[in-house]
Image 1 (cartoon, rainbow, N blue to C red):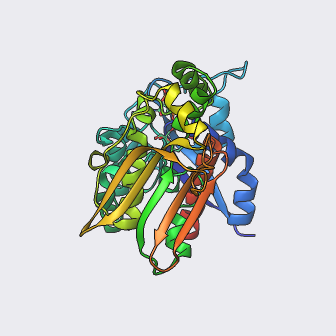
Image 2 (spheres, rainbow, N blue to C red; image 1 turned 180 degrees about the vertical axis):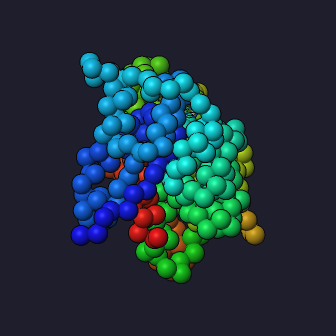
Image 3 (cartoon, rainbow, N blue to C red; image 1 turned 135 degrees about the horizontal axis):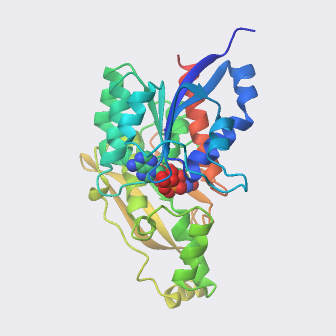
Length: 345
Ligand SMILES: NC(=O)c1ccc[n+]([C@@H]2O[C@H](COP(=O)([O-])OP(=O)(O)OC[C@H]3O[C@@H](n4cnc5c(N)ncnc54)[C@H](OP(=O)(O)O)[C@@H]3O)[C@@H](O)[C@H]2O)c1
């Protein structure tokens, strides 16, 4: 059997997703080498406040996890001081950047700078951070093409569930006319827990403890995360050229238990529903608190079950659902993007 090809990785962000990715790669190291002829070696890992790792010779995912875990099984900072992401990436000479830092709902500049540095310096880029796709997709995809690099982002919307890949690979010649979706687990959990009599604050604490909420939960609660997903999906699949600022959004802060209870009594569910549709010459999107009737195909989306209805010209409406979205699924999105990169070379 030929020697596996080694690809070197710079991972920016070692939180829920970054750690799960290392666990997944560590578990599948042999599978990657034997079945796919791919060996992944980490040359850099960056965090905001837990040190950094720079190992230009490359270490395995299992070694990254060992460095980041103390003898009691808790988290340990990486050995070197925190460094700027771009500096770390360039010093590492990585073949692939994995962007897994938190969403910046006001322009996504930092993550965009990470991707620009990668694509401009000969590396491919994978992002689970939806910010760059929501704010700057056209320019970044043009930059990738100009440098003969790839920009992949399956995890940016609905975690590891193939939304971008399914539409682009399995629905040839279809034009996306619009979509309707429940994209945010955090607001699902909070609305449902409030319907069971749990306070807003306690419901939020539960969902944060489970690792679903964005680092700053106001991004979920006030619709910024959902608006970024609307813009990302519309930019990629509808060439919308929009940003999250173009998407009007409802917050769930003002929702009362009484409103949720009244919806329930009427056999309805309150959900944060994301939409986009072609509108004249352009595309418009929205994030709206909506009461879904039991017959609606999105009615069963709740908790960590997310779903999107893709309205197409040739294939009618296609529904995609992800049952039980967890950070592990987002890590899988990166894993599948890494394989796609490897197999396209
Ligand atoms: N969690 C999910 O299920 C999920 C699903 C889909 C998409 N995503 C997206 O994936 C990304 C990561 O999510 P997560 O849940 O893993 O977030 P997280 O747990 O908050 O982790 C974020 C990581 O990024 C690091 N970081 C923050 N600023 C940084 C900077 N300037 N340079 C380098 N590292 C920096 C943090 O450092 P410290 O460790 O020092 O804090 C932390 O390690 C987000 O954009 C999120 O929207 C997450």
